[in-house]
Image 1 (tube, rainbow, N blue to C red):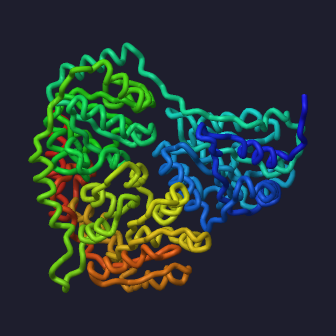
Image 2 (cartoon, rainbow, N blue to C red):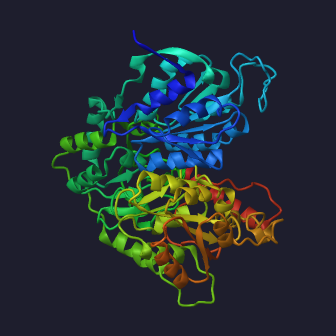
Image 3 (tube, rainbow, N blue to C red):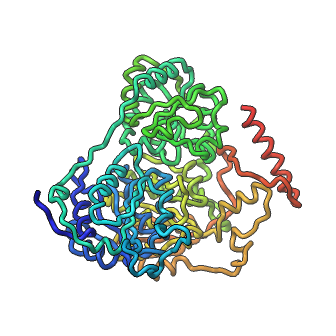
Length: 607
């Protein structure tokens, strides 16, 4: 048997460089790295020699460079991914939040944090976490609950099984998610005689799980018995590449569609069967249809509480069906399961439902919704008031085109964009709302642009999220990545401030003016400019539109900052969300809110 003598780190990089997609591209595009002790000597050396084929990019924060990798995978529908490596200790732990984000969203990313010495010779090393009762524990054990596959490499030859398992996890539609290979730093440097066959090109094909015929039969019978069925389109529609299939299925059987945050843009906003966003941040058109539906078919959704209004959006007598590639998601809330790839499942359902005609939605539902919300996004006529987030969205919408991707993750904008953004085609809306992680936005925009350089990427980010993590803006400048940031400065955490007020609480510690940071006054345009980005502060919606027009000619990141009113939100649509209110308070507003909360709980519990 032919062998090749390499260090374990060199073997890892060579193996990963040869794992291909069915489209003929490398599955892992490259590696994001911040080097330190634990990964600089051996893995850094291996990446250096491979950089022409397997590029390495330098980040400024371990968490945010991982967000870039995750956004890349999300925008490409999980067809490709990236590797991320850090030193041991704080470098590794910085990535745990990103691993959780990937886990919640079922997105592939390969984490390779450095680890302590397997031989324990210098034990304890710098930055080592010592467990007083278990000598095998290191900081990297924190990755275990947020990884779909975890392994600690304590011998070089363990990579012979660990790496294929890692690839199998990241490419499996049902088990897809983050993989962590904690790589002991001494093992990285050890040499081993590897089988040459281990490094041969391998193509990983998309596995399309077909539905079990018993499950298919039960679901078909349930749909045939339904008078007013409805489809909830989730992120799995995008990951399966099933957007066209969803449209054909809906049109063939006259079934209206509503969209989750992850599913939005699966169907064009103006398609007559698209009733818009569903749930807590949903449109009245969608939520009314949900309440009236006698059968709800979830396609690729995990039925998060924002989708279901904490399980109050749907009528209690509604039959719930879940078409999902993951068995765990397919059986949630007593749903009739149809475990299957979305594209395959819709195709086989369509064959069995030939001739079935659902119930066309009342066109007035959608017309009435837009009649309510379209005026909110128009440019204001009174120039003396702070712009609203809705007006900012309207300006960005008017500046967008068919190739625009609007993206966000946390704060006010996810809810407003879910309700108001008009996505013209699949991939035009990128929202990380599984973990809703502040700080994903700037880094995520980079990942989207790297995934699809031809797209116009607009990042909507509040001042709170921008302050949480903005350093990768310097990375975008250095790499010449053209993205547009629209920073809405409402002086704090406006979204949570409204939630605080809505549950009877006093305004406290959310907006800067109601906190210990009341004297804070940050020039965000100057800050962005200091990192090399083109930047401008605008005072009106008209000035914002002018700036967005100039952004089209920028060659790198372009940042527009606008002050906004923290209080208004879209008053139409929406739905109840279960946020517990204190049973006892000295504050009358809290006690009143508690009474309303108990009423809502009773209504849900009584069905």
